[in-house]
Image (cartoon, rainbow, N blue to C red):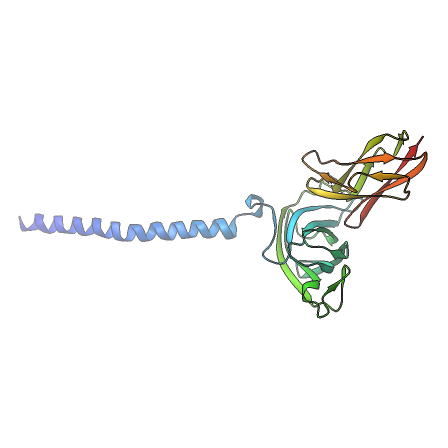
Length: 267
């Protein structure tokens, strides 16, 4: 009977041993699994993103091959100034594989809440995934020792903001131009009537919503209702043009350093 008691005790001890160290083994396995997911898993299952913590924000981005090139890619960012003050002369630097690629952004003066576009060509040596540090350097008009004056700022200090860019890279896609389009580029309008002038803003070839385009004229014989149009969900901006006299009017639609023209014949 004594032997049976010892056997039962040993069995219970074995069970307690498995329970105690089983949890430890499960924790180690879970930790290894998380380490593999966050470190060893290919970037193809990580979400594509363009993210800045402070200073500026990334509204949109695009990575594509430069047309006609087999070794050069293009990185384009649409950035927003979320500060309460303007920024001046923004510059983008893309840092990847120990190399830095720098390019000026447009426009050179960015009001609070306005957007600006940065684009730089880089060597295609990163394979099927792009993982890069992105730096936006700009002059902070809010900290200018002379203060902001008439849309400019004097001797402002420079600030640099760091962001991260992750993208699944498709070499079969080539970068398209960033531009404004006015359709049609030639129109006819009767004296005393009004007509909508439609336009759109394409960021690297993609029509972009939630952008305000400015409308101006070279002739006081006609006028716009608002002087601006908003690309809403339709991705088309419109403003109503009213003609007072016959003649020819040139319409200019502009946004962040980009512009397009249309000729309106009034008869």
